[in-house]
Structures are given as structure tokens and as C-alpha cells.
Length: 232
Image (cartoon, rainbow, N blue to C red; front, side, top):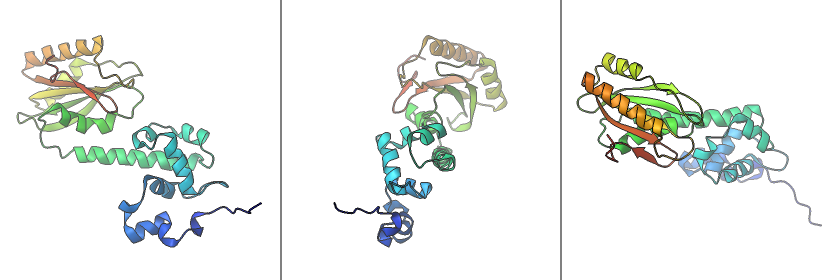
């Protein structure tokens, strides 16, 4: 029988090792598995760090958004060679990436469409397993002055305090509001409660001359806009 030895990262040519490859060719030359392998640092007795990273990515169909939904317990339980420290490193790196996307959204100069709202709040809401409601407060030029989480709930819903939203709008001297929340189920269609909240917030805004421009429901790869559907 042929004697097979395990190929470790250190046995690879220097230009093929993730860290060395990054130094030689730049971070853009690395695959997702190689980047994840750098975070993991070491594999197990059967796999190099990169091979372990490839297996982790394969389990989520190579989708980083899906990977971002795994918990520390998921990683430890399902992948040999991933302990608490490595799992924490992976989760922390993915969270940092999510926050980077969010920071980029801060420069959004003006809301001109529901797509703009999706781009701003998708990084905040897409990976959550519970519902959160956020509000964007806009000036007369439809520029976002402030965004704020107004409610956090369970898997199937959350409670929204219309008075708190209107108070924040008044304190911020906002001319308009856009409400936004996620549906962890993946179904972007509004519920009866969603319709009720939209109606109440619109009526409250009319009294105070603060317009509700839209209510956007966000899922992983889709969204529902009340304004686009003509339901405002």
C-alpha cells in the first residue's frame, strides 16, 4: 500500500501559503477559504487550516451571509478542530465585516429610492434570527440625519412604540421618517401587524407634519417597500 503523508500548510510552496501569498500578491489574491484559514490558523490531525475552512464554507454552500448566521456553538459542534477560541475569532471577523458595510452606508448622501434604504439597513438586519425595527430620520433634502433601533423582539414579531419614534423625530428636527424591519422567516410580505404599525405611524406623522416616506421589510436577498407598492 502506498504510504500517504499529510500535507500541511508549511509543506506547501511559500507562495501558496495564505499568509505568504497575501504578502506576495495582496489580500485580493486569496480565496474565501484561504482568508478563513488565516483566521483559524491551524487545522486538525486530518486537515490543514485551509482544508478545514473549505469544509466549513462548503457546509454553507460557500455563502458568507449564511456563514454569518452560525453561532459559536454551531461551529464548535459541527467542525472538528474548531474550539471556542477559533469560533470566537470567526464570529468576530464576520461581525467586523458587517460593521464595515454599515460604516460604508453612513456616507449615503440621500434617499432617492427604497433600494437606498435596503443598502443602508440590510447589513444591520439580514443575518438576525429575531426581528428588529429601525427608523431613519431625514431632513428636507431626504438626507439621513440619524438611524436608530426602535424595537427588538422575537422570531415572529416585536412591539413598536409609535410615541417614541415621533419623539425622536421631533428631537432630531426630522422632516420625514422611514421605518424598516426584518423578517427572519425570509418572507418579505407584510403582516397585519406591519400594516397596522404603518397606518398608525403615518397618521401620527400627518398630525405633526412629519411624513412617513416608506416602510421597508428586509429579508436576506429581497425586500418589500410600502411606497413602491403604493400602500402609503
